[in-house]
Image (cartoon, rainbow, N blue to C red; front, top):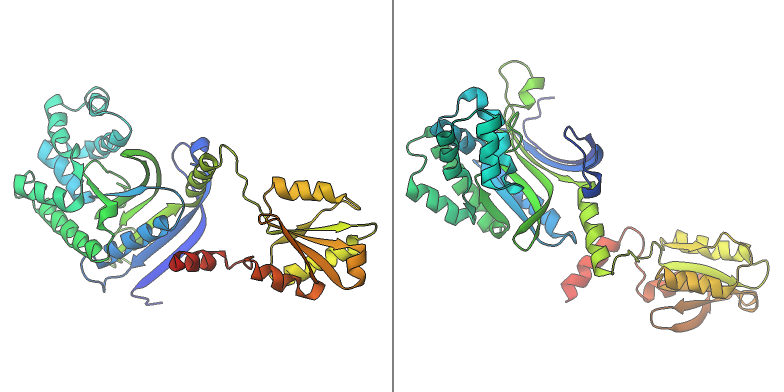
Length: 375
C-alpha cells in the first residue's frame, strides 16, 4: 500500500521458543505488548531513543518496583568477537555463552566457551576484557573511547557513535538514568542489526527477572517485500504475564503473603424475605452507572454472612435493601472502611457512591493519575 513510515502498538498472543519457566511467569503461550517504528524517513537514532522512552514510561507506570534497561549494540558484539579472534562460524554460540553472564560467573561462562564450544583459552580471556564491562551509559561510553579498546574497527566506531547519539536524546527526555550500558548483553542474534536492549526488574543491585526487550532489526521486514527493498525497523516488547507475575509477587509481599484486593467496589445485600428481585434491580442500576457491584446468588441470606463476606474480601461499600426501606423507595449505603451508614433514595444510590469515591469502571487509571497530580 506504499506506506513508508509507521508507528504502531499491538497486544497479542505469542509463543516462546525456549524452555518455559511457569513459576517465573515465562509461559509457552503468553501475551506480549509490542511497540514498533518502521521506515527510513527518520533521523539517526531518533526512533531508537523513542522506543526506549516508551518502554521506560510503560514500566515506570507499573507497580513492579525498580527496573533497569540494559543496552548494547549488535555491531559491538561482532567487533568484540572479531578483535578477540573468534572464528565467524562460532560467533553465535559464543554470543549465547556471553549472554549468560547475568546469571553465571565469568569462570563458568569461560569454561563453557573453552570446554564446550572449543574456543582457545586466550581468545576467551580477550572476550572477557570487553564483556565484563558495564555501567552508567555516558561513563561507559567515555571509558571505551578513552581506552581505545576497539582501535580503528569501523563497525565499532559507527556503533559507539550510535550509542552516543541515543544517550544524548534519552538524557534530553530525562530517561538516561534508567539505562546501563552492558557489553555482555547479546540477544536476537538472528535478526537484530543495531542497538539492543533488555528490561530487567531489580532488587537493589541484583537482577531478578527479565520483563521485556527489543532492538533494531533493519533486515527482517525485507523477507516479506519485493527484492531489493528494505524497511528499517526498531521496536520493544513487554511480556504481559511476566509483568503480572511480578506485580502479584509485590502485592503478596506487601500484604503478608495473600492478595486481598477486592474485585468489586459494592456488595448489594438484603434484609427480609423474598428480596432477590429488589437486590437484582439495585445491582442493575449500579451496573448501568458503570459501578462495579455484585449480589449474592443465595436467596434470603442473613445479613451477618453478607457483611462477613464483604469484610473478608475488603469490599469498601455495601448497599442494603430492607423490606421497610424499599416500601419508601429507599436503601442503605454502608461505608465499611469509615464505619458509617446512611439511608438514601434508590434512584440516587449510584450518585451517592460516586460522591464517596467509587470510580466508574474503566476510569481507574485516570483517577489514579489525578490523585497523583493532586499530591
